[in-house]
Amino acid sequence: MDSLKIIIATALLLCPAALAAQGTTPAEAMALERQGKLAEAVQAWRAVIAGNPRDAAAYASMGVVFARQERYKDAAEAYRKALALDPHLPGIQLNLGLALFKQGKFDASIPPLTAALSQDPNNAQAQTLLGIAYYGAKRFAEAADHLAVAANADPSNVELQQMLAQSCLLVKKYPCAEEAFRQVLRQNPDSAAAHMLLGQALDGLERPDDAIAEFQAAAAVSPREPNVHYSLGFLYWRSHRFDEAEREFKNELEIDPQNAEALAHLGDMELKQEHLDDALAFLQKSVKLKSDIRLAQLDLGEIFARRKQFTNAVSAYRRAIELDPAEPDAHYRLGQVYKAMGRTTESQRELAKVRELRQKADEAAARAIRRDNH
Image (tube, rainbow, N blue to C red; front, side, top):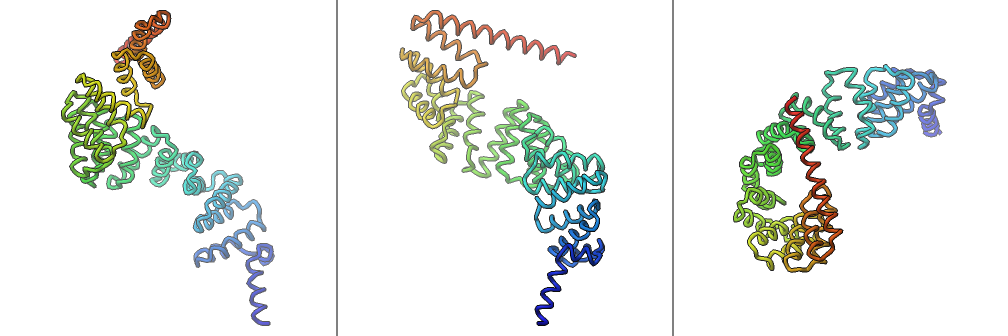
């Protein structure tokens, strides 16, 4: 009987109505939280709210307890109710943003985190969370702006530097990307990934020799890193260093025989050397693995056209045009194939498209020059 009384008494203590009737106070709810009795603290805050449904601070405090229990959805709901009652409650926007962030709701977390930073521009936590939220939402331009501030305040934080560097790289802010990747390498000089990404940034800055040096460093640190040999080979290929490019593409294929890009570039080099059979073998294997490599489609079109396999050439050039309609080269080559086939109207249409695209390119270049001169 005594044990039954204890159970009943305990149940009453956890009942919000009973707590409200007993006049539960915020101080009592906070005491339960300090003792780590989080479930009881939630019930106590519910009782406080039952006694005063417009107590914004009680909702906010209950949200904090939910967050400590990792019940972030409940926490966010409590914070929203607190905000509806008192939009100026200190810290509530940051807490709401964090609760949404913890659920992976990066887009939804951005407005409250922005509000929190607006209320306190020196809040490092809000600045960092906002930058990561933009990064998680794939809004890389805004991510770069906020992560730059956070990373500059904490230069030893490799994770922040990596997110900043990647964000800058993705929006082609190459000087920012270069500095951030160099900061990563100061902390971890043996990071093959950082060397590769720095190489991409340097390539974007039109410093091919420096880019090659970074990819060489990545290959030295981690010779079986996926794509490191392909990327190095691509830089050699673009610099017309074909012997070195061939070596790197073949190194990549030893690691990944299904690397369609490496196969396509090997095919292109065989074509440049007039080894049509070898080129065709590489290119057909490439497009079988991956049909959206434009270089492979262009080169296949050229081989088929040379061999007067015009139907195949037309298919390859049309696929190249699908992959990038704004490039005139495939239109021109397709026009020549149509001409060879006696399809004059279609040939003229393609050649007219070439003139149109070149005119647009000239106009865009002229606009860019005018902007640079102002």
